[in-house]
Length: 176
Image (cartoon, rainbow, N blue to C red; front, side, top):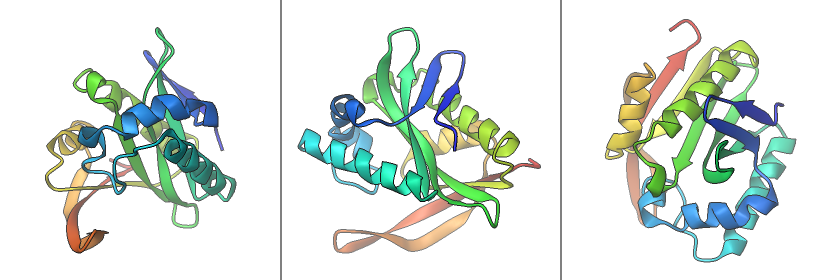
């Protein structure tokens, strides 16, 4: 699997343990993790453990996660990648997060567009999925901007403590 992608302003590079301090700052922000399926991190060791877990999953072709780096400043501003790639059915789910200080600058759109291009042209995938909390308006706007199709609501799909949350399913096909 590829370890690096480039856009006009960004470098997407496979996560490394040395990214843990930067990613901890992002993943410890409750505004960033509000719609993620993890609680806000309280210790940098949690970021290191997450990076190691994602690396293990990438070794098994079960995920690949990139650190999103602004080329001009070399600053890590988030992460994105493919979750649960299914090469038999030529599909994968995408996930992404951006530091709050960089919201609204088009970085997520640029990073996800790069993932889509790579998925459809190089990996030859047919379908990319995104499961989003229905209240995550910014993520939904991003997916709409990238011409994802809303397919419906996955009722009580994900457990959060004692409650079960709905998720909205969006998809984009290679033919779209």
